[in-house]
Image (cartoon, rainbow, N blue to C red; front, side, top):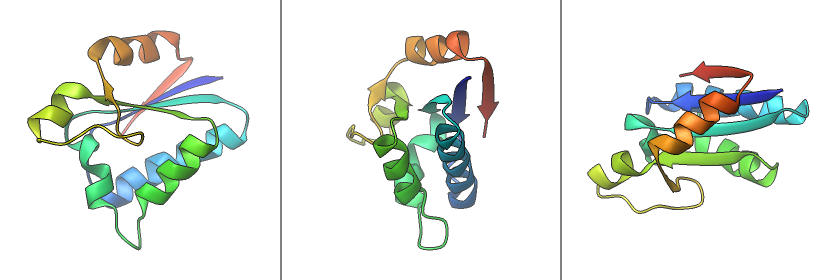
Length: 106
């Protein structure tokens, strides 16, 4: 299955659970892409010891998952792009939705 996950919140527990779910799907041999937008691009800064979304994102990337992040949302927060939060576009999000069998939003 092709699974698209859109994360638009920066709540540490929600981001952690969303990325854990993405890892679970990867481990079940699904193709998974995550798109962060809005406050979601802040997930690394909001990550904490109890709900460490950064660790989950690193596992996701190493496991073959693909992360995208809204470039406008990153730039509006005066942030720099990174492997865990790369500059992407609405076209990328559109393609994820179009190509996915299912889309889950958080």
